[in-house]
Image (tube, rainbow, N blue to C red; front, top):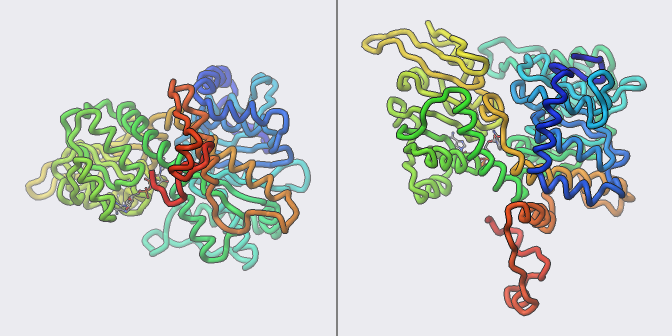
Length: 498
Ligand code: NAI
């Protein structure tokens, strides 16, 4: 269903199903619900126009409606072509008080199974506020992976230069199909309205970024002196990366594998590339299911951690003919390449749970001579390699076309852990938006990347303890003095690593 400028989703008829799921999710998201209670009256986001680019799931619906409760005007797109839960998108558009015949909620431009063109057009939609000449933009971005932020930066860069670079051809060094889609979109935008990105960029007061990959992009922009507005790195709140990236993956990786393949994990050999936060959760999930786990790392510290946690540390080449599952968690590119896949065990399952699809060389796979692709079901494909020499025909099962499988093949992380992440997002939005309205000489945030102060991190954790029946011990004033921390926190120095 579509109403131009207002929404574009699978079907408004799914709204009721989505609303039931949102209601249950709210019960599992105590941090967000506590923030609603805390700020319902003062509405610190009144006046904020938030452009959101983050997986349009049930949990995200609770985030969106929290931002609205705090006073914000919101538009939303997903940050992945496969991650939208269509019923959640419908419920958000209809809103808690609307009906499919009379939608009263938030504009959403997202559905499961977008093409790349559609994906970027949706991202553009959330950056343009309707109503006047189409030049009013958001004043805040809430990003996951940095695509919305990148579009604004690239748009401005090309607009200043007065030209969008030509598309590259397949095989040229900087060719990616996706970058060409972005360039075409920006070329059309430049032709239609030569000042649009200048005005949109000028209106943005800040961005809050959800994930490791997006944060990485922000630090690169800040180092180059090109970051256009202040940014809060939500990912590196302890209550985000040490929870969502780890415990969320521990839940949603097996969920994605099970829904996609229903292959038994116990007794098998699982290979996990990367032993950062996501890799730790992935390895633990496989072990919990009774698999033997082999980990690869480039960082000696993480490699040593993996070894001390009891995993074999090896290279992918060492286990190609042995492992039953190959999962990448690195945020790096070309981690699983075509030549790897061609050498894997018959029917090995290959998946990526990092952010972008370039962790697995899908383009290279498609170029293997004689390779065949069979759709088993949406987001599950068998790639068959022809017999060569004494190797008979064999195949690998690739999940979500190389894109993040927990959101492509399942529904992403569960609500409780997303409540910790999204509480940080909400607090970060309030923090940046409030700061931007202070007189310039009293502002705390410039065009750099910041993390939330530790007391706020502790506040997020505190909000989630009660629901788990956890009872926190309180320091006595003497104890607090003895270990040198305030009774009410923060309890650790900035450099503490958890
Ligand atoms: P991290 O930086 O903690 O861990 C990544 C690890 O991969 C590092 O230890 C690094 O040394 C290692 N690595 C890099 N290149 C490698 C290579 N070629 N071979 C083996 N290891 C290599 O990052 P984190 O937080 O674990 O995130 C990883 C990715 O997952 C990011 O792209 C992030 O955006 C994404 N992510 C995905 C989620 C999901 O729901 N699917 C949730 C959270 C994060």
